[in-house]
Amino acid sequence: MASNTSSPDHEDRPGEAQGQVKKQEQWRCISGCGACCRLDPSLRQEAIDALSPAQQEQYLAMVGADGWCIHFNTGSRSCRIYADRPDFCNVANLVKLFGSPEDPGAGDRLAIGCCLQQIRSEYGGRGRVMRRFRRAIRQRP
Image (tube, rainbow, N blue to C red):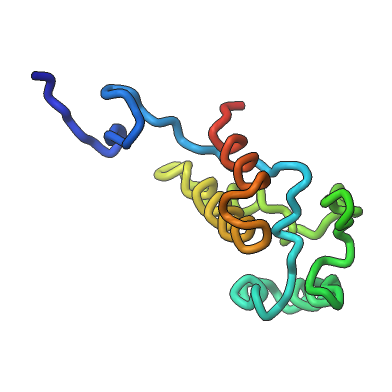
């Protein structure tokens, strides 16, 4: 009978073959999502509180009457100012900010958790956008 040793680097997970280590998920933005563009202050107060006063002013100025960013194109689910979007709109900044040499995956886990929550809230937990996001974060660069 084979022994099963567990360590922080190897944990058995349902659906994985014994001895196979699950790869670290890596955050990736997917096109056609835009769940993070839902800026409704009543839903995002914690995020707003983390911003500087100048960023808070800019953030609140970007909120449309429907709670979505005024720069979000709902038809294509894309950002009209993506290349020039504010720093607080760049989820990749979370990855850089919260990653560390001791735990390089911390930033990815935080960004993935934020995206999962936003996607679930906007599009549902079993929809096409969620399935695409889950596939994207499992892919290696």
